[in-house]
Length: 258
Image (tube, rainbow, N blue to C red; front, top):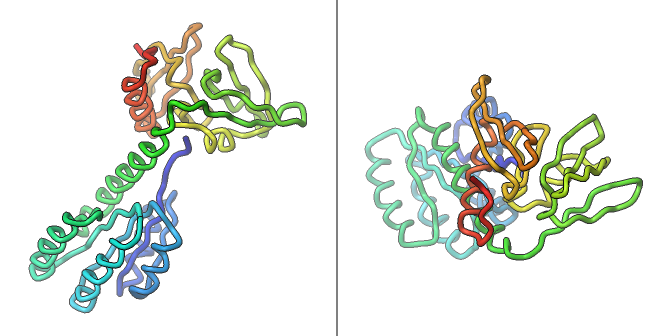
C-alpha cells in the first residue's frame, strides 16, 4: 500500500493561506479554489481529499448550499472550516449539527491547529481508504512484476518482503525464502498490494502475515523480525500502515503475528 498524502483544496479570499500550506505540506498537492463553483467541480472530479474553508461573512452564506449539494454526491471528503470570530463559531455549531444529520464529515479548526487538523483528516481518509480495500481481503490478490524482460504474476500471500537493492532493481523474497530479482520498483508493487503487504521503510515492503516480532532499535525506529530470522527496518513514518495491517490480521482467520 502506498503512503497516502491526500490533495488539499483551499477556499479563501487570502491566497497566502494556500502558499503557507504548500510550504508545510511537502507531499500533498495544494489547490486554491476561487469560488463555490470551482469547489463543486473539484469535488465531482476528485475523491478522498481535504477541503479547507476559511469562513468569513462573505462566504458563510454559501456553506449550507454547498453542503446540501455534497449530500447529493458520493464523496470521501474531510471538510475543515477555519473560523476566527464568535459569529462564525456560533454558525459553525449549527452547521456541524446539520452535517451530522447528513453523510458529511465537517470539522472546526483554528489557525493555530490547522496543520494538526489536516494530519488527523489525512489519517481518517487513509483509514477509510484501507477499510474499503480490506473488504476484499478474503480474495486472492495478484502482483505483477517485471522479470527477465517478461511479466511475472505472483500471489501476494506468497510474498514475504520486497527490498530495493539498486536504482532500478528490487528483490522479492517468497514464503519459501526463494528470491526473485525484478526491474519493477517499490511504487509499482505498493500500488498493487493490499494493506497486508505494506511499505515499512523507503527501501522495503513487508507482508504482515510473516512478521514474528517487532522491537525498538537504538536509532529510535523499529526492527521487524520475519520467520527465518530475517530482520528489516520499520520507520516511524510508516508505523500507521503497520497498525492497520496488524488490525486486519487480528480480524482475519490467519493469526501469525506475535
